[in-house]
Image (cartoon, rainbow, N blue to C red; front, side, top):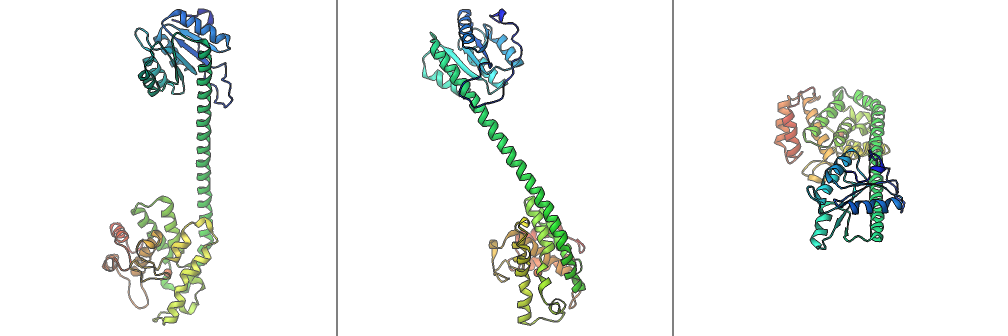
Amino acid sequence: MNSDPSSGPVGTPRRTAGHSRLEPPTETPIHVVDDDQVIVDGLTHFLRQRGFLVHGFTEPTQALSVIREGPPHLLIVDRNMPGMGGFDLARSALEEDPDIGVIILTGAREVELAIDAFRLGVSDYLLKPLDFGEIERTVRRVLIRRSQEIFHRDTESRMRRAVENRTLELERKNKLLEGVTVGALTALVDILEQKNPHFQGHSQGVAVLSEKIATEMGLPTIEVRACKTAGFLHDIGMIAVPDKLVEKTSPLTRDESAQIQQHCRIGKELLDPFTHLGPVPDYVFHHHERIDGSGYPDGLAGMDIPMGAQVVAVADSFRALVEPRPYRTAHSPTEAIEILVGAAGIWHSDEILSALARLRPSASA
Ligand SMILES: [Fe+2]
């Protein structure tokens, strides 16, 4: 029962916002629960005199139903009560609201009791007979600590949300910028592909297949997007290679090959200023590396080759094989995969070739 009818209805006290000041807010509701009416009256009277909003109960079950309507900031509860004991009431109250500060009143002095209480989430405990000076210090300490904890947690939560929102916003802007950049560079890719009719649609084909392979491999979304973009732009450096070499259909001399190989470096230099493209310039730079180290421009081998560059390289090789060339007809997709798998460990890695084989790509996509 509510031991103090003159206090009016207990109502549904609400938590105030967390704050960091070192004085506890006196408007914060405190519930005192003890089966001893004298202790309830004494404590409520004393704390009200100190300016706190206090409600007293001698029935723990009634206190719990009021707590469920609106949790107090602080629960001062006797450990030994008939029926629902102090620990049970504290546990139920903390399930309702883990932010409730709980002070246990007890006559016991066992260390085990303190350990059990703190394990339960109790903030502090007071020994009977009660010392009012100690009560006030403990109440203020628990309320201040509670306010500080809520304040720090809310601040952390706000900062985490702000960082998350900022990251999402940056990602959205990057995606937008990437789209604009790729759109603008499409004109260069078109010019490049017009130089040689056999290259028509090659960049788009490599982009689509790179995206599919990266997805099949379970790479993160941001990496899949980078592979797609690098696939589309992989040969953009060819724009600076003399037309007569790009258009040449007969075998290249060593010097001509060396000039053609410059397209990796030129592509990277062209794309490097677009910092929002992330790893794309690197993937473009390394898309002619081979897994055994026999490729160019750096002769990287194995896992030293960026994964995105390896994905683009496999897509580029497959597309080149299923496209006709002046010196041969197009291979079927099955033949292309057989050729690439036959050179596994030399040109490309097993892992990426397996992903390609699982995809069973057609000649058109
Ligand atoms: Fe290339």
